[in-house]
Length: 309
Length: 140
Image (tube, rainbow over all chains, first blue to last red):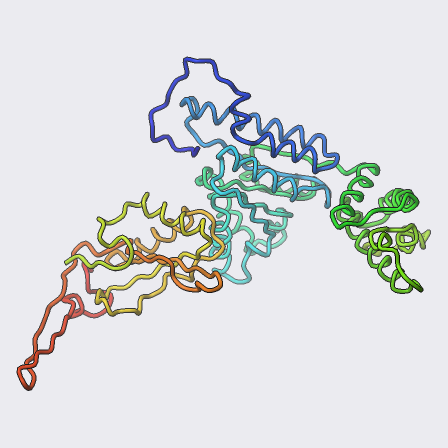
């Protein structure tokens, strides 16, 4: 169902079965998937349920002609790196598609480089090109604050911002814009660009993951690649997470993914160096030494500026 | 004389809503939509000007309708056609092409006959519009 109202509104006389509307839209599958596939993120999930409920009621209201305007659906996702903003944005696109608030439901993920040009007259076509791709779906702007550089008044980012603001206002039924980034820098960005703040309906804050949540994320990540921890290795991974968090450039789930990639690398080297035949089960098993090779365990000095270890 | 060419040429001109549905059909099939314009109506004219590049990676018809309306605004008195390219292996060619705008007043074609040796006859069709230089053939 689209947002246009060609046929005259039918005011209801019968009671409305919201549960049936909910089931009919197929969003319960998306929401359950969100609950099942994403570890932690309790406040985010709660907020998304709230938004989904709002959208569902809005849709029913539209059906009966109580709501006349396309609602503002633009959102901002704030949180540290690796807290699942892009993943949730993808789910959001499916929810919006299921409820008919976007027509196609694709997610176009961009950063400043994709929107802002390098010379005069380059920005507008570039931004419009991206917007054309995003029409009918969701435009996800990662680290949106880089669009605005207050220290350089001739920066072309301003031009991209103006086009975005215009589209966010005038083409609300065509696309939904999600701005994402670190909480503090987004706050500053919104303070300097009040136009964005007023056009954004939903602010969602992504908390950092707990250590236990990260451990369970690492289990899932390995499982997806057909690996698993040996019982000892899982204990080591728990210690790794605690130590990694104290080090610079910790980025939640992304750091975990990088750590596991390197553990796989060490595992492969260990297997190659192994004399004799290899038990097929060894191919899928991450052992403690694959994790203990990490620099996180080798160095006691946590102030060094190495990116990941 | 109404020039007909491509798909739907036997139908009345499509409305914007109908065009939009055709575009969405093309996009749903993963074809790249392309806009071209010309003011030379001759059926053998294969050299149409391109309106920008073929539009790859677009999901919704509204984006293309926007481009079409821009093209219409600038080339008020031209023929505009929309085509969709299928890049799938073994197709790799246009799957659909139809006219989405025509000049308000289509002058049509003049047929000339030339008698040549042995009572032979040679025919030529010439668009009345072509007597004027490119860009000023219709309306302007």
